[in-house]
Amino acid sequence: MRMKRRRAPTDPIERVNRLPDEEFIARYLQPSSEWVTEWKHPRTNALYDVSLLRSEKLSESDLTACFDLIEETSRKDYENSTTKWQPSKKLKEMRSPDLRYILVKDAADTDGSSLRGFTSLMPTYEYGQAVIYCYEIHLKPELRGTGLGQLLMSFLTTVASNIGKPITKVMLTCFVANQKGLEFYKKLGFDKDEISPGPRKLRHNKVFTPDYVIMSKTAVPQLNTENNSTADGVQSRGGGK
Ligand SMILES: CC(C)(COP(=O)(O)OP(=O)(O)OC[C@H]1O[C@@H](n2cnc3c(N)ncnc32)[C@H](O)[C@@H]1OP(=O)(O)O)[C@@H](O)C(=O)NCCC(=O)NCCS
Image (cartoon, rainbow, N blue to C red):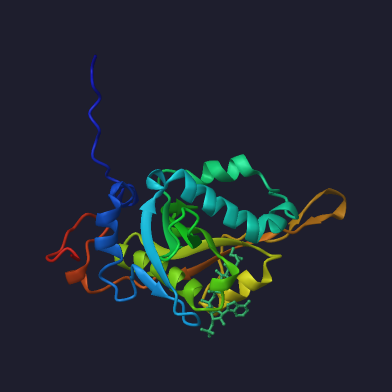
């Protein structure tokens, strides 16, 4: 049987997506002082483990815990939207090979249900723009209003800045009904992106207004290439390790 040789990816985003997690962290997160593997709750002082792993490395119980958390925080918004709540479609999306998860787990809870929050991200192209897409960010109620959401989003901005060219921004979708989410993103400097669809005129003078908004925030490229490897594959001295 003839074996097909796997060609080296020439697309810079594809190259980033092929990196193993350890290298992804070393190149795009560790050069930043914000990256942590342990987080302390500011009110309770409880400790939480922070880890990054790609979807295929996620255990079934972690995937289920992430899914359950999405259902807990957002099922109503999905149900009230044109998207509707479609569990199998959501699970399929959650298993997308290029998605990486940043999990926040209660360090004291070792019974397998320790997930308390997570975000998921993917370097990808959206309408021709190279972006870091934030697929999800969800925290258990006891972790909200602690600065953790801001910290997790800062990891995504850091990844975008450290990848640099061709990534230009961090992008996400939020339901219009999720006013708290929208306020949170605005506070972090996100604005409605130019690709976010506006109201559409339908027949019989009807107007369709989308129930979601696409938001983005420009990522400032990391100028210190001493600590950075660009997505173009130009590895600088030091390599961020
Ligand atoms: C949205 C979410 C991730 C935010 O995380 P969080 O830890 O509560 O937010 P933070 O404490 O990091 O807040 C960061 C900043 O945003 C502000 N902020 C957060 N929520 C806000 C709100 N509803 N209105 C106004 N400002 C808000 C905070 O005041 C803080 O600003 P400050 O530093 O000046 O005080 C969290 O509330 C959550 O998991 N919600 C449910 C799931 C969800 O809706 N996810 C988004 C789906 S699109």
